[in-house]
Length: 97
Image (cartoon, rainbow, N blue to C red; front, side, top):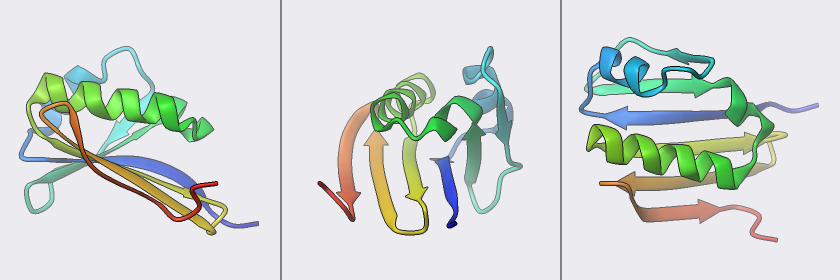
């Protein structure tokens, strides 16, 4: 059995701002490293791409920052979406079917 995970990398925002934006959700938010904060949201662990995209867009809008939502499924599938100003700027799916 491979790895399954989802996370959000936010660029140029304070950890406290990310924690506040995720209020009411069960999440872990890292300390800043090289201008980025990484958030792990428990609900996102269900790997529903629509809800992951919605949260990434919301965080990008609320915090006015770039957000990279990334998902690994069973070590076989890699998917990401990049949001800037709440808008989808780039995406990739290693298994689009």
